[in-house]
Length: 335
Image (cartoon, rainbow, N blue to C red; front, side):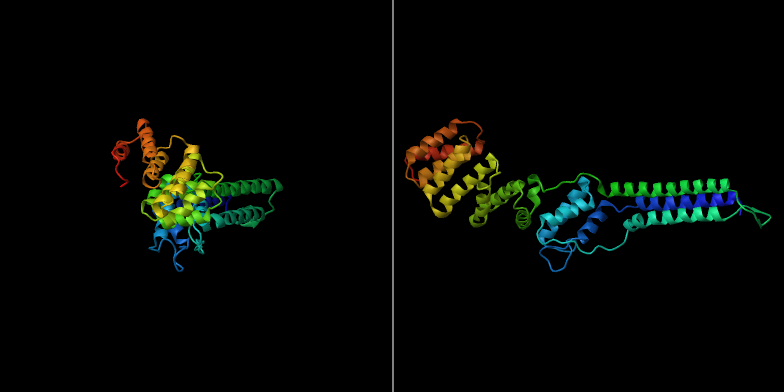
C-alpha cells in the first residue's frame, strides 16, 4: 500500500471518529428527557422502592418540580443530585444504568490512545514497498512517521476532550442553586418543607422556610404544628430582626388565642416591640389582648390610636383597627 493510500485511510478513520463523537454530543437528550432521567435515579423518601419519577406522592412531585427548575436554571446533574440528597431526608441515589453518552466519553479517550499507538507501531514497522520487495526504511523516514502519528493521536484526543466539554455544557454547566429559595415555596407542600427543614436544621438560612411553614399552619389554625417552628426561629442566634419579630408575634398570639395566656402573650409582644418598636402587627395584637384578656380597654384604645396615627397600613388593616378602636371608645366588650 502506498504512502498516499495509508494517509487517506488514516484521515477517513479520524473523520469518522470525530463525526461519531460530535453526533453523540448533538443528540444530547432534551431537558425533558434529562429531568426524567434524573428523577429515575432518585428513590422517593416516602415510597417503597420507587423512584420519584414514578411515584405519585406529593413529596416526589415536589422533588421533580425542583429538578425541572434546576435543569432550567442550568445546574449540572451532580449539583442537582447533591441538592436533592442533602435536602430530602431519606432520599438515596438508585443504581443508574450504565448507558448513554457517558460511556462514550469514558471509552473514547482509551480508543483514541490505542488507535494512535497502533498507528505509530504500524507506521514504524511497515516499510516502504517497491515492486512488493521489502526494503529497510531510513531512520529519518521512521521519525517523520512517528511524529505524524503522534500529531494524529493528539488531534483525536483533542476532538474527544472538546466533545466531552461541549457535552458537559449541554448537560448543564451553570452554578446552580444550592438551596430552595423562600420565594419558590408557594408550590411546595408542607410535607416537603418539613423534610427539608429536618435535613437542614443547622443551616441558618432555613429560618425563612421555618417561618413560611409556621405561617401556613398558623393561618390554618394548626397552632400545635406552627409552635415548634416559631419557637426555633425565636431561639435561633442567627435569626434576623424581622424573623425574630415575626416568630415572637406568632408565639404571642397563639399563647392568647390558643391557651388564653394573656400575660405570656403580652410579654412576647413586648419582646417583639423591643426589637422593632414600629411593628404594626405586634402593637395591634397587644392592643387586642389588652382589651380582650387583660381587662385594660383604656390602654388598648391608646395603643390602637397610636397604630392608626402611623404610616404603612393597608386600607383593610386601617379599617379593621378603626372598627376596634370605635368599639373600645363606645365601651363595647371584645368581640
